[in-house]
Length: 235
Image (cartoon, rainbow, N blue to C red; front, side):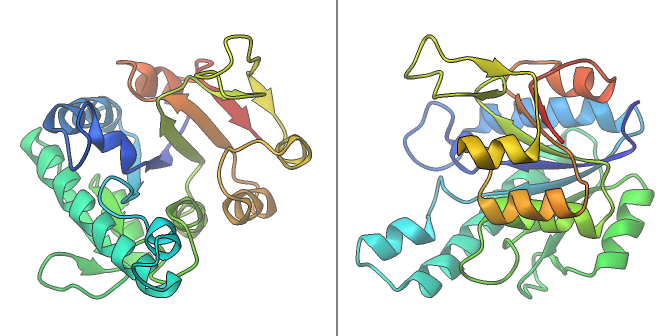
């Protein structure tokens, strides 16, 4: 494999599948199969999952339900629900996992400790990071970049439903142009919605490349680990 250790960022919305709310079991099964293919090949895998399929702090605050900080904490709890679902699905497919939470929840997950996370990875366990960074006003994209830097991952991978980064939304513009490779500076200058700016800056300052790819295409993740050109590389 080209990469030894990777951080895979999954969006909560992706877990919706064909549903309008909650978690689609078929999506969990697909993700489990994709991750297992690279774990079996010797890749160390860490995962950060969003919570947008259940609750988003920004939307809760904008809707006047709660203040932003409270909304973000609610969103962190949503990521833990998704993380537990992923953990159950992955273990069903024979993978050994560990769920680490940025907020103490001893009954369902270990507290995040950097060295412990790295030991789990070295032992071949899939490490799932829940509860974002544990702080409001930070997205799970930022949590993914932060954890990737902390565990010394070779690559940050953002799994989406499109096959890379385009100059405009390919779902709205059929003439959108895809980038096979792009620099961090171009992401800034062109205002491309890859990840939020805090997440992008963390990766840039720590020389952590990012790949955005379509995780819904079977085999894409293994191809990427083999060094094939899949999605868009930001470096």
